[in-house]
Image 1 (cartoon, rainbow, N blue to C red):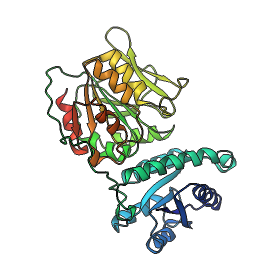
Image 2 (cartoon, rainbow, N blue to C red):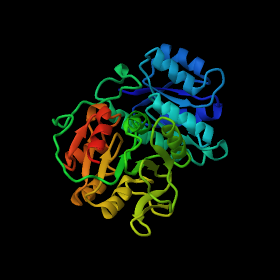
Image 3 (cartoon, rainbow, N blue to C red):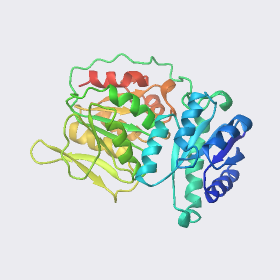
Image 4 (cartoon, rainbow, N blue to C red):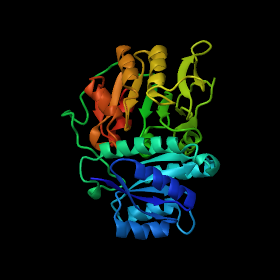
Length: 355
């Protein structure tokens, strides 16, 4: 069964290029286009697409306003955001993801869009493959905010686990569905948690700064995009900058510092990579660490958690039912690398118990 897609963008250039790319992909049918949210809302009702590609900035009704209406009217359609690499657009994209958009891709400017057509196609194809994999039922009955595969592990939501040693750091890896999940989980962590939190969210440059700003406004913790050489402090969440690799390293005396590399290659096609971060956590903290894998496509974090677990770290994974995409957690759970399997609403509490 083909995925029916409505392309929504106020620029005819992008409506054409995105439509052409989607029509080249297997199992995809472009059923229509719209140049603003108001028209899109009408065509969602009449054409009943499974998915829309949605521009952030549009006249009459912008992308955020359209998403709010989709949620308000409980329309059964999912969303991929197309966002320009500006601070304003990236902040709006974070809001869209927290409203339930499935994922997003960054739009190149029109001057380079044709040159980057293959990259756009690659990104859309990757997201669509993940989207198809996330649905175990007819996409017609899904909601934007509830793309949930069934639990397939046969394990309890929270696996019993006892540990006497306390962790001195928390490291988190997350991908598709991350901004929405983090907006629900991070505010549940106490502001005086007493340890630093190192976080890799798969995201391109600019967008990670907007994610940090958005989460900081919701949380009692200090949340920031990490910078090279800064000291790692408690009660602070350090988000790896998009397009870089982040690790923790030894500083002067007992201090730990952040190391950011633009030159380090991608791992698992990811930059930032969870594996890259987790290896450094195992080296610097050993058994005094808690490592968490949450919703996301792919297997990034599996090799890293193999290493952190060997060093004595506590391993937590998000259970299937609350994941947007059950790829990364599935990889570590099926490899028996996990001590605690918890639903999204319980992860903050499970983290706190290890500290």
